[in-house]
Length: 229
Ligand code: SF4
Image (cartoon, rainbow, N blue to C red; front, side, top):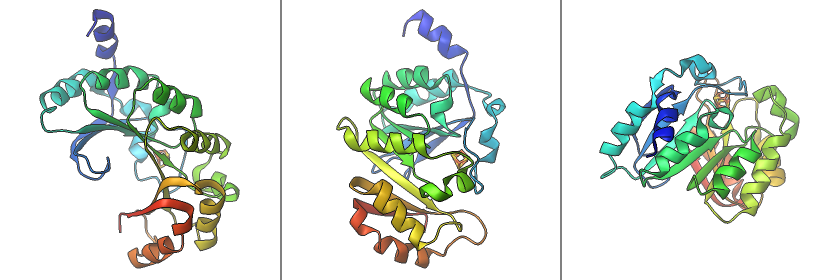
């Protein structure tokens, strides 16, 4: 690692990390890094403490050193949030993780298509998971942001062949079966993988209901995964 890169990394703080996850990188043992700060305001957000960038207080170099010690048995690192693509330190973090030789996955809300394009085309990630949280008509109500940039990111992921990707939809109580069909038909259709996730709030749909809904979505992606039920 060059001195200038080391100096830059020494200034970086992250919100926290999970030393081992078996569910965040498909088929891999992964650590998960959390970067605070997000440009969405999903009404069901279960990571509200990560919306505030001031939560980034843990020196990244400490985590990097720990990850380096674990490279023998860890397969991957997931960079999550918050929303990592709005963080000015995402690229230096990805560059540093690349040097560990571990697989790297990016979790994103899709609002920064150019960042997603850049990290993929520069070979900085091996897998991308992108949230598609609502159909066009309900996107602002559910996330507080317009959907156009998310749609651009979806189109880019579908069009590229560099890395595998997963589109994910959290089934909030504000979505009904018609909404899911609309997301499937108008946004997901033709994707490799669509993950349907249970929402972690009161009044969320039951596990049985989520599974039943997912059965009717099978025509929209090559693979439908149901998580959290
Ligand atoms: S995109 Fe994720 S972190 Fe941001 S508000 Fe929505 S659920 Fe919370």
